[in-house]
Length: 59
Image (cartoon, rainbow, N blue to C red):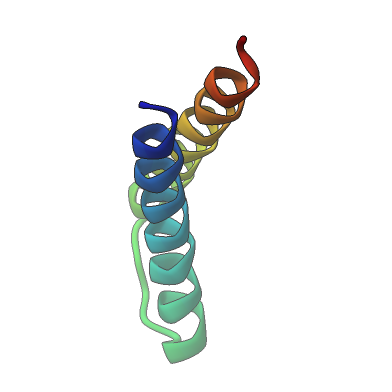
């Protein structure tokens, strides 16, 4: 179960960060909601990674 949380969190966080980096590199204009959505998805990914780490550490 912890591996699932770690994998899903990692994929969500990397995909959100990669999307924002791609938009910054290409110079495409995105409304502010796109950045907020990316930040929220990245935050959810970080929370899932944290849950996965805590589940791994649980006895």
